Length: 140
Image 1: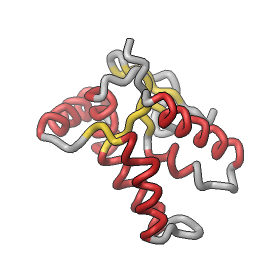
Image 2 (image 1 turned 180 degrees about the vertical axis):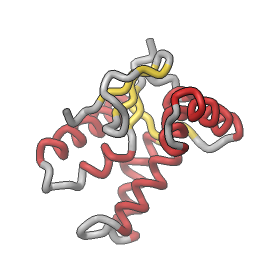
Image 3 (image 1 turned 30 degrees about the vertical axis):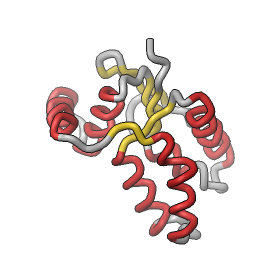
Image 4 (image 1 turned 90 degrees about the vertical axis):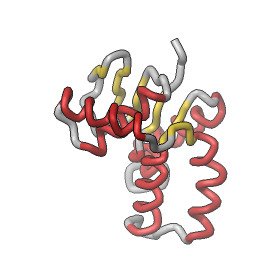
């Protein structure tokens, strides 16, 4: 077993959400663990989605400088899965097989490509399995 885990975008968004202190604490703990153990990973899609939310949708959006600093210190060290034709092919197969949305299928494909055992996300059913990958909702 690899011990690797994948963090979905919502984990990073909740690290900034002081209106949900329990979710924020859980998210901060997961991100710290990912960085400290180097067992946590993300994909290009998580970076893109997070930056879109942080720069445009936060109550107090991040400045470009703050976003760049967060990328350098937090996101970049975890970035392990890039866009590729193989990733998109796998996502298409997962989309069809499990009837997921395209964006969810790309997250699943990235977690599988990254050889993760667990995908931390609130966007799937807790305990749901996709082959060897198990989804865990860290905010339950």
